[in-house]
Figure 1: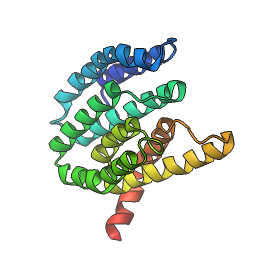
Figure 2: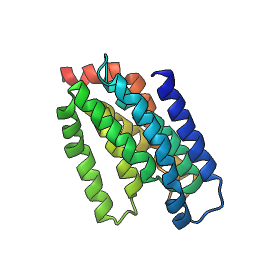
Figure 3: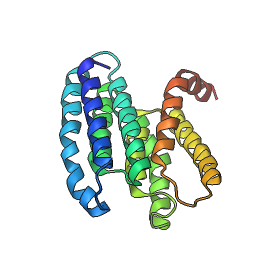
Figure 4: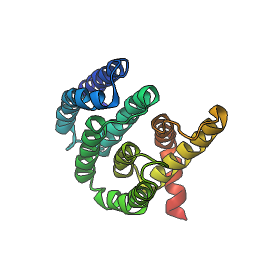
Length: 199
């Protein structure tokens, strides 16, 4: 990750954390939060020049991890994951996938993971998994391989179940758990991917 990309991601995260502390209603947050899109634009602009260099998929993974960490913190504070964070990250991941030639894997992830979860969200009317989570998952299935995406969501689900049992609540923020699962999957990717390829 280049210093410029890191600086953009850091500024973006700080901005979202500051907003999370404001005493705003959900509707007010939805109106105020889009100004953070400027930080997303900075992140995108600093990422584009590096997409044609070696390992362009690393840009998509970095943007996805940065988005998950930032939105995870905001989700923990507010209970919401905002489009101003998830959609630009998905766009960066898609551009990186095109540059890296991994669009086939991205499409497989969208069809095999993203679509079923979206159907579940629609069927449960957002009570089992919210639409903000679905939009965050878009970046995961585009930027990560299919095994890594599955590992991310499995880990997130497991830690989420532990959280539910610990706090004895039927509603928990899923963002922090996705961030944890993605971070672990990214580290274990070199181990996970060959295992599935050999299978």
